[in-house]
Length: 132
Image (tube, rainbow, N blue to C red; front, side, top):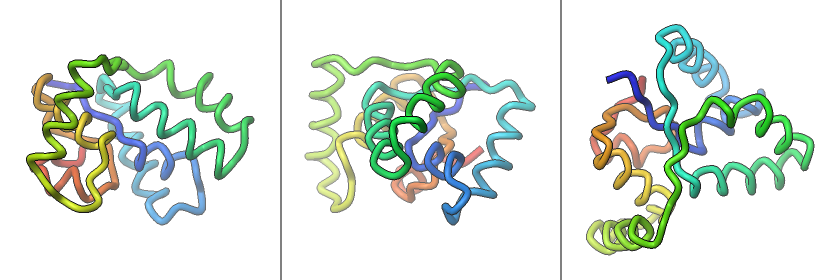
């Protein structure tokens, strides 16, 4: 399968030259583009990305992301059922530092059979996913 989940941590690293993972993010993104990977994310991840981009870089960066990058994503829109599954996952893990956004991401990844995550958030590795 050539689908890869995209997390907020990768997008922020990719968009921010000052981020410590920026070079790794650029290399990973180039590899994903070369293999024509389908980039999958959730509406919760998009909300998180927009909030962080706005806070760190301003509205212009939100607009740039929206026109340049978000069109490359296949978005899984979070509904009430998926939200509840994410909350259940969070309750089962009882792990400090795990967010609802990440929990929903893991539920989606398992539901869709995704094994790779374009992410620099350690929680993805802890859950058994690998980086591309």
